[in-house]
Structures are given as C-alpha cells and as structure tokens.
Length: 289
Ligand code: ATP
Image (tube, rainbow, N blue to C red; front, side, top):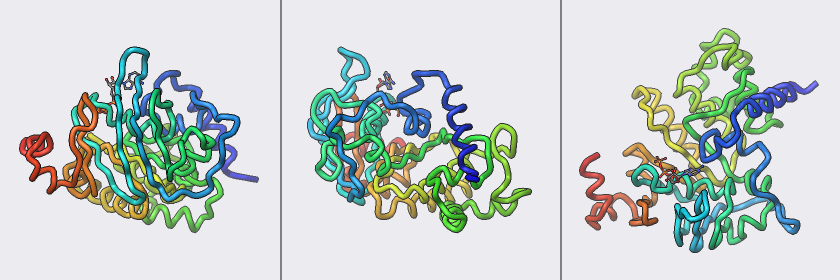
C-alpha cells in the first residue's frame, strides 16, 4: 500500500474547501496542483531539464480588461542568478512572478525559459521546474513525513530526512512525540510560522526545481528562527535561478541584482552598491529603511 494516496485525497478535499477565486499569488501551492486557468496548446512540448534562464520580452498584462498592471516589461534573468524585487505595495512584483508558472498568460510580449516561450511548454512540465516558497504555506493534516514528501511523492525516507536536515527541521522533529510520524495541522501539533516555512523549504529540496520563487515573509520571526530560515534559503537557492519578492534588508543586499518596481514598471536595476551609487529611488528608499 502506498501511504501517499491518503494525503492526496486530503489535499483535494482541502483544495475544494477553499473558495474559488483566491487566485493571485496566495495559496500558490494549491493552485500549482489544481486545474489551470491556462491550457496546454495542442503542440505543447515537455521539457525534461532546464538551465533556468528567464526572459521577459515586452510583457504586458492586466487582470481585467482595460486595467494594465504591467506594460512592456523587459527583464533578463540568467540561470543561477538571485534577483530581489522591491517596490511599493501594488507595484506588480507578485504579478511579475506569477506569470512565470503561467498562473496567467501575458497579454502581449512573451516570457521564455531557456529561450522557449513558456506557452509552448506543457504546463506540468513547466511547473515541474518551478518551486514556490511562500509565507502562507500549504500544509495538510497528516504526518511531518507526508507533508515533506509532498515535494516529491517518490522520495525515499533517506531523502526526506536529508531535506529536513537541510531545512533545519531535524531538531524540531526529534523534539516531537512521534518524530517524523507526528500528525500536524488541525488535528495534530500546531507549527509556528517559522516551522511551517522550513517545512516548505524541505519540500523544495525534494522537488529540486531549477527556478525558485520566494515570497518572503513580512511577518516578524524571532531572530533564531529567522537566521535558520535565511541559512536554509541560501542553501536552497544555490545553483537555482531565484526570484525573491523581498522584504528583508539582508536578502536585498545579498541579491545578485535588485529590481526596483514601481507603478510605471521596472524603474531601476543593479546590485546594492550600484543602486546606492546611482542615487535614485533605491538609494532614497534605503535611507529610510
Ligand atoms: P505587495 O508588495 O503588496 O505584495 P505587489 O508589488 O506584489 O504588492 P501585486 O500583488 O502584483 O503587487 O499587485 C499589482 C496590482 O494588481 C495591484 O493593483 C493589485 O490590486 C492587482 N491585483 C493583484 N492580484 C490581482 C487579482 N487576482 N485580480 C485583480 N487584481 C489583482
């Protein structure tokens, strides 16, 4: 018998109990697994491996007709690069990131991964290469093991432990009454926000995608938890193209490139030193941080 069949039934139950239309970026994980709003083209191809180069070419998009959120966005992200998006609330940082897994299709222009228009790729093939870590992580009522294994349902016990270790979850697991087999969620042990985030990081080590989208938490975590998460995320993002919707100063300062987004689009880009030296929006923003 396969212990993973049960959780999947539960996942579907959970998904169905959510109201429709909580789309956007929230509840990302569920959206990744539910019926997509966009469909495969008949000639769509499966892409087995990607390097993780991402390119936006003159991308325009709006959620509703007549209200553009993004206009003519050009952006090139090299494989392995870590990009931090910063800018005021509502500028479109999340929207830019949600176009990459095709939660929505662009209205004009195109997005490519390794030079391939993402609309030419089978959706499940595209999404296999993209991992999302967000603050509002999706856990189902099941064991820690099942919740981690959700990142790769074929994972061995050894791989699950390895992912837990790399996500700084080992100590927590050892401290639980039944270790890996402890039930979490509504009917079990409640996890803190930081513990949930680490669990979602563990999933990503198992999923092992080339492209990582990280919706950084705005909520404050205690210093120790914060440090653990930062360390795990740094390890996770190594060798992957990482796009962070950034809220933490250290994340922003350590990024290979910072993209400053405002309502007019991409206003500035460069690393921390470059943007400080340029004396533009970022340098003014930074002074008040
Ligand atoms: P924040 O830092 O607050 O997350 P953001 O820069 O990520 O902001 P987005 O969430 O991308 O900004 O929002 C950009 C614009 O798109 C906003 O005006 C927002 O109201 C709108 N918007 C976002 N999601 C949806 C949606 N699902 N339907 C309609 N409009 C949306």
